[in-house]
Amino acid sequence: MTSTRNTHGTTAGETIATASDATQGVLDPLMQRPSHAGRADSGTRIATVIASDADLWFDVDLDDGQGSLRCRRVASCLLLPAPGDTVLITSTRQGDSFVIAVVAQADPRQATLAVDGDLTLVSRSGGIRARSAGPMALESDTSIAMQSPEWRTQARQAHCEIGEMDYQGGHIRFSVLVSHFVGRACEVVLDRFNLLTRSSFRLTEEVEQVRAGQLDIEAEQTLRLHSKNTLLTSKGLVKVDAEQIHMG
Image (cartoon, rainbow, N blue to C red; front, top):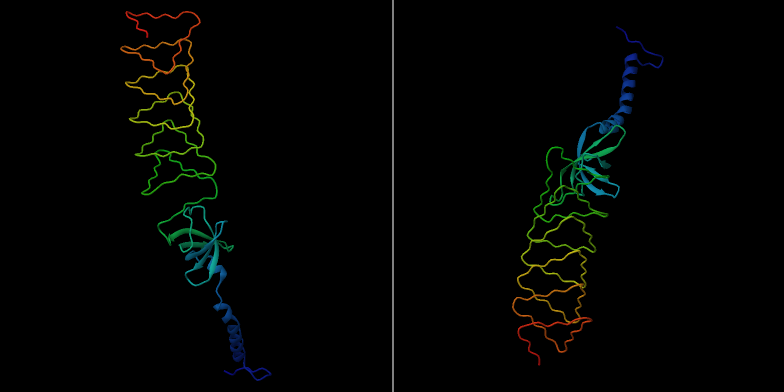
């Protein structure tokens, strides 16, 4: 079988081989270049958080050596990533990258659960219990509201510091062994006041005044009134009645 040569002295087979070599030389750099679309569809990858900002964007370094990415956190990832944490990320076809989970923390002693909006924890058929081996703090920048048919608090010691407090209730009862009240002023307004005690001692350094419509003082054994100056005055009647009256 004879080969056909063109006017330039080359055969058809040599022309095809030359064109194939030229095409291969052009495609080699393109084949060696990483495909961004394939990398976006490559599923999940491991990365390390290097920085974060106030808008909850995270800069991560890919562990496969493909550089760094700027990611957001998915809504289901409540654990807030911190610099140094190992995270699991994924990318979309549009080129957006997201942190979907925290694989390992750089500091396992600290963890933050964070959401962008309001957070509601609901248990439809059971209870919710929070337990801590260390101190537990409940803080709010505005207010804390608690509502329940019954409220129980139990502690060995309690410390309460409140600038101003208003209490409204139908009934209150205190059962304590020892109580101490220290204050600058005390004002009590009541319809009726009953005080039952086995022994009572009251000390007033300056002035004590009693204003009453009727005053009844009764002592079973001894009644003693003593002062440097004693004044007994009455607009109507002064009556002193006893088996013996000693004056002087």
